[in-house]
Image 1: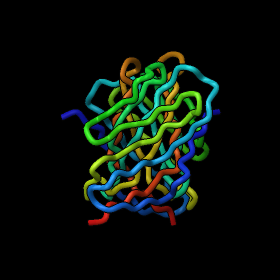
Image 2: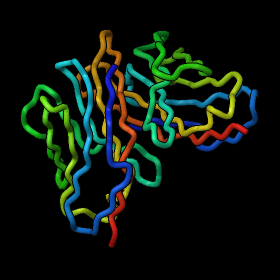
Image 3: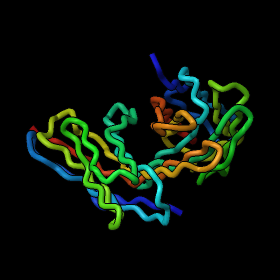
Length: 113
Length: 117
């Protein structure tokens, strides 16, 4: 089954404790992206990657890091989480050309206390 | 920078009625794509319908159709014969392909739609 997986689905952590949210896709997509969803703001792009070892900032990259060492994986790293990073996070992937449909993961609910 | 505006934070209709969700966007681009995504209580983002800006014909998918007005920069979603399963948050999104395969989805704030029995 074609899918994007994220782990963990729920996470409660404390300020300053480094964490990683994993994202993996099995569709051989070149393009992957991270979004955060906040009430009243919709989804906003954090980082994106056009292929292995190629990443760039989205609209709200402060406080986040990403890496793309393998085509299928695109982890999101919060090195020193703060309460304003409490949000719902989505990973998405798509082909680089053609249909431009982005497939979303199930979401990760992160709470930073 | 592109912006997407959904002016209806919440809507509520009776089952079997028709409902229209509004979306406007701001761009100077000529080639772009527009999407409506559905987010049910499960939080999964589900693509409902897609419209290519170069196509004049409005997209339809079963009970879902759009009214795409390019000059007015308007992209509304019509749901006919609404069902209880249509209850969800609906997001309008704009996408402009960038060089080297980069893509960026810009989302509206969302409209929470409730279908009442």
